[in-house]
Image 1: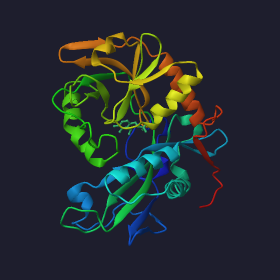
Image 2 (image 1 turned 135 degrees about the horizontal axis):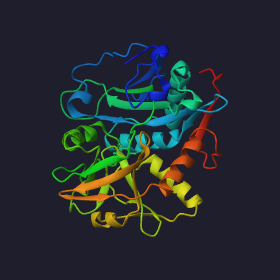
Image 3 (image 1 turned 45 degrees about the vertical axis):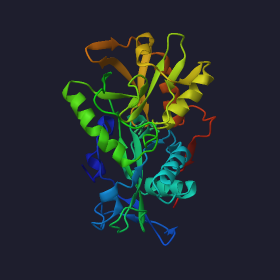
Image 4 (image 1 turned 90 degrees about the vertical axis):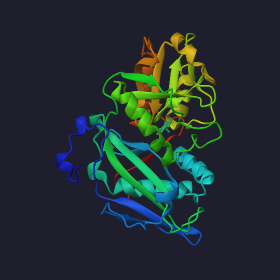
Length: 340
Ligand SMILES: Cc1ncc(COP(=O)(O)O)c(C=O)c1O
């Protein structure tokens, strides 16, 4: 943990908390959001009867911004993050943050923390963490009277530094078929901690969940989507209502189509994995991280390649850094001279 830019080794950042200069916080009460303010003290005052503590009413997002060669700040796919948070708000009765307010909050936080922004040539970038929770006082179960929306930023590097070993989770489910696995709700991640820690103790880096009903179809990893290249060279990723709609996965599917790769979003029977040439964990934090092996019970499948998905990863990284044309309009460019 640091709050001094001089201590940051931008070449070896990893994915750890770094205290930056400030964050932005907005409050909702009486039916509307206030105008939001910047704060530098990272301890905030919350009532002990807030809905977040007792009923887990909270959502978060994760997205990234990059420094371009000519020093602009490039925010990647923030509209998609705003929309996903709005979808979650609807499900767990939190007042929506408009896309405009979401983007303004991000821009304000980024531009006021420029001194913590990893340089263009560092392989690092700025991770953006918007989150929203019930901060109103209520004893009985019901929607809160006050909500808080915060955006903080944190310089990051690589999530994984090696190919990863994966374990299939058998004794727990991540989400029910009609549950809340398709929203980025805090509680989903609490439920995953024990299964993930147990698999880490067994020497695995990442946990893979199957569908809760039959334990037959692949769903997703703890904090990322499952993507693969099948025996016909197609990009495949699971179709399920109980997984998170990954924004990285959506972008990669567009990039795959552009390279003439057929994309299939469909149910994936676990038994099929032996026919997959390439398998990756896919998400904002992990980008596309190659899976080395997948173990279920006593059987391990070694994934042979990382070629097609590697080229898609490079395409994405180049767009994110402004080195390749963004024909999908996913990047918002903030000149560092902007004042907010
Ligand atoms: C459960 C889960 N699935 C998938 C993803 C990937 O989503 P995205 O690409 O939008 O980061 C995440 C990322 O946070 C996640 O937590």
